[in-house]
Length: 446
Ligand SMILES: Cc1cc2nc3c(=O)[nH]c(=O)nc-3n(C[C@H](O)[C@H](O)[C@H](O)COP(=O)(O)OP(=O)(O)OC[C@H]3O[C@@H](n4cnc5c(N)ncnc54)[C@H](O)[C@@H]3O)c2cc1C
Image (cartoon, rainbow, N blue to C red; front, top):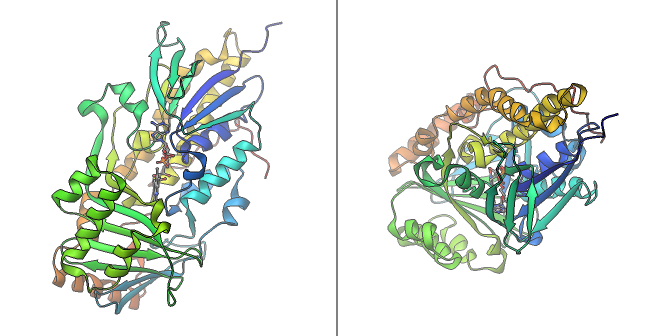
């Protein structure tokens, strides 16, 4: 009798959304396939739950259900009734109601809105329940060195972590987000890194609440391609998003090389310099220095477009492989869908190996990685084809009169009950692509 294959040693870099989702699927591979999974996360556990509202859309909801976490996710959904569009004096100009009917197109506030931190926690807790022997987390640590061992693409990868430990892994998965270090190691950096900037940046942080802060989001535009958005998922704080699409040199410098304090200062100056008396500006820029704003996170929006997602024993997933830019509202859905497809293709190809003459079913990994790409590419292309640069310019008008026109257009469309205008830039449409079915991947029990 052939002995069962050795468990696959998997290293996942990044415990955001994609990493733990993949770990959950891989931990359920049917016997004799078994994985020993280590997830390395740069942030400490206590700081890995930052970020604001993320949406699950279209097939992303189906992919979330495949993880067996629907009840836990549902319990933490944010109930945002809609978005109030304000002029710079704070006067309501249009109201985009959310569509929670479960039918028809979603608007800006999706049916499945959840705080990024809550989704990360749900995934983390589900992995933790499996026990350390299945999924082991190493927080506050990064991958420092990746060395391919000889073996014609089949050799293991020697990994050195920032805590000084070393280990050998059969599969290294880059789930380390838009600036992925694993991607850089795969491509050797430079122009092949695949980052395509979208031409706007955002800052996210929390400030103390005030009386009058309601449950609806507020969205206020300012000339010079700037906006402030506030959202309220809970009573004890107000979430702020600042958006900007311009060439401010102070902000550019701070985003590239600045400390958090310099980044906060640069963002405050973008609004304070000529809009101090406009709606929200004083409160929100002052709020940047409140203790609650220690969750401050800023990023330049970009897409990741690369022509292959795996090489030898390296594979990329989520934003690291195909970040669509947050403007599409699809990044989290894509990460969940990608995790399901990658695990499904591993179950299919390596499961076949386990039943056949192949001595080691894991030798079929290259087949699985190629199939992951062939299956998922058409879906990713549909999302990458969304014209994000144009959308960025559309939602961040340059002049006051275009902002007035923007408000009027939204008002007209909502009055005529054509809220679908909002879906133009927050689409659920994934064309004809459907989430594949993998009977080889056992369904989770909730
Ligand atoms: C802090 C943060 C806040 C966010 N906030 C929002 C938001 O408010 N709204 C929204 O729509 N999207 C937000 N996003 C993006 C959103 O989470 C992703 O687009 C989407 O969920 C895809 O998930 P992902 O797991 O591929 O990437 P991410 O969620 O970006 O996760 C990547 C993970 O890898 C970790 N990491 C990065 N580099 C390394 C490294 N070298 N070694 C180890 N770990 C590493 C990061 O800390 C992060 O936890 C945020 C991302 C981050 C990192």
